[in-house]
Length: 254
Image 1 (cartoon, rainbow, N blue to C red):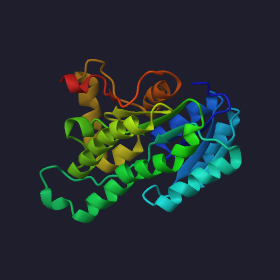
Image 2: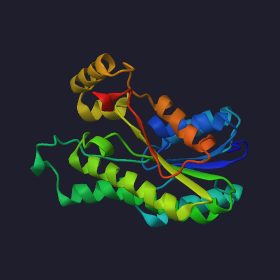
Image 3: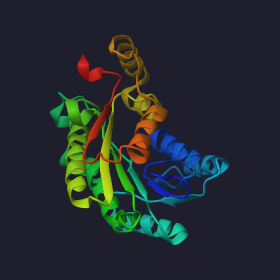
Image 4: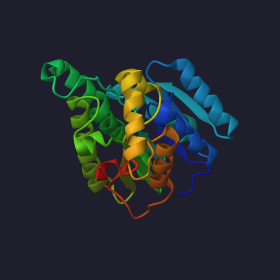
């Protein structure tokens, strides 16, 4: 895909993987929509970073679990650039609960997590699909997780939601081809504040040290390394759709 002058919507892009993806795409000449739900100042900074790289950027507050917000965000992008070529469904949420603590999750927890992690990507894809079909070479990349492959992670609800996102990636790929390719990345442990704060610093450091000692590549994901794989699905892999790629340094091989 030619990225110069293309338009990308990256949900949850005020920090972490979303922010790294926005910067990487902006550096390739892609105009970007920076989406946030609460962190306005952080989103503005990411937008400034992207503009400094020579791209145009639009900051949009939206909750992807709300269909009206999804449609509004797409319409704002179309109002500014009259096109949408790329959608990165990165926004996500969780509740940190030990898997053995079945009483630690309520129906409301599942509904909230699924609302952002599964319904959100569906609604964003639906809202953008008509415009993306006119692109000529459009790509959707869903940010799932190794949790959806291995049944691990911050909680059973989170793992189940990411498994559902992987399955939905296949379903959407079937119905949106040939105009739109739909794929997913499944990161393992990603370094950064989100996981550190959720796990607690001691557990975070212990897990990071274990993975960096025991996995074949002796490495964990960074937001930037995940962004590189997202870019791979966007810029290359022209014959690939409906696939998920595990990014884990070889964790699944243990």
